[in-house]
Image (cartoon, rainbow, N blue to C red; front, side, top):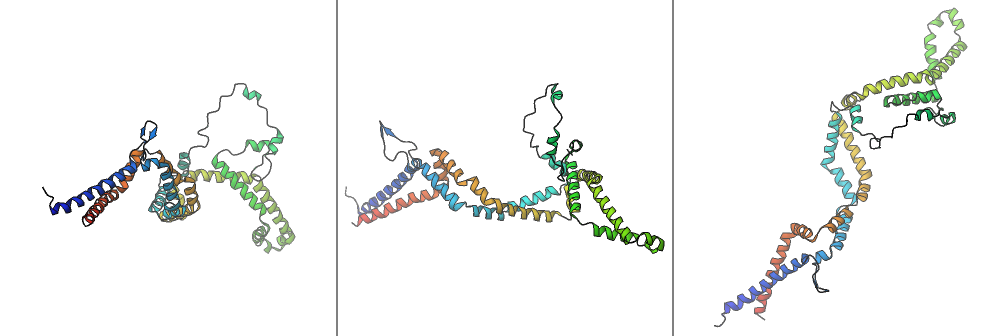
Amino acid sequence: MPITPILRIIVPIALGALIGYFTNDLAIRMLFRPRRPVFIGKWQLPFTPGIIPKNQGRIAEAVSRAVSGQLFTPEDLVAQLKGSAAKEEIAGKLADAVFSPELTIRSLSAAVPSPDASLPAPEPEPEDAAAEIEPPDPACLDATVSGDGEPWTEESVQDRPTGTAEKIGAFVADRVAAKLAEADLRDAIDDLVWEGVQDYRKNPVIALFLNESAVDAICAKVESALRSYVNGDGRQVIGSLVADEARKMADMPLSELADQAGLNRDRVAEVLNATLDRFVEQFGASFSEKADIGGIVRRKIEEMDAAQLEDLVMSVMKRELRAVINLGALLGAIIGAINIFI
């Protein structure tokens, strides 16, 4: 039976389309298959394993360089973090936490584990261990200085503050003493004393005794007594008062402390947001480099087996690869149609 003119047209076109379709489909499958080398005896078949499994390490390195060098640069990270809505949300959540009535300095410090919490408990000492301990050498005491730079005596070592509030009190007292030691108090004391004796100097008899030299001597005595008191008993008084206030403040809600400082929730959120911006600017680029995003991507790709890698690529490019197969069928049909006229 003779072939009709219609079949002369249809067959080459259909055959070209089928060849184009299946060759492109086979080529795409050969990107991933076979997943392992195929051997005939000791001879490895060519094109096994597939192109992607065979070059998985090189592909991982190329993707790693692209991610770290172009797609995820330190500058991009800093810009993304600074412009992220999450940053403002974090600042808002922190501000809400600050103004929570349950949050105090004491509860906040209690939530932070002690640096010694992970250390093993010390072994119990033998009963006669105390008898073996000798008193400290006075020379060792000289090597330890107090907050004002003066050597500790044996008595001051025993009285050294141990609690947090006491340490704050001792620190403030030392700073007050140091600042007073640097300050010129004489002018202020002169003004104060002269103001106090003016009414008395209106009496001629008293004015005879409260002359300028006598008032100057009184001012010198007051200055000396003040400095002596601050460096002596005054430190203990100041330290005790500050420690008492520190203990009271430790139980005050942070919201109350912020309110006394003239801060509201929006202002605290604004300050926290600006602080996060500075933190991101200062440490964002360094974090990106040290986090080694490219290295993470490379290791992830290298650790995937061939099936997972195929699923990953197909999940991203399945539609595009299907379009390549269909395009092969179209090109095959066109070539078949051209062959009709050759």
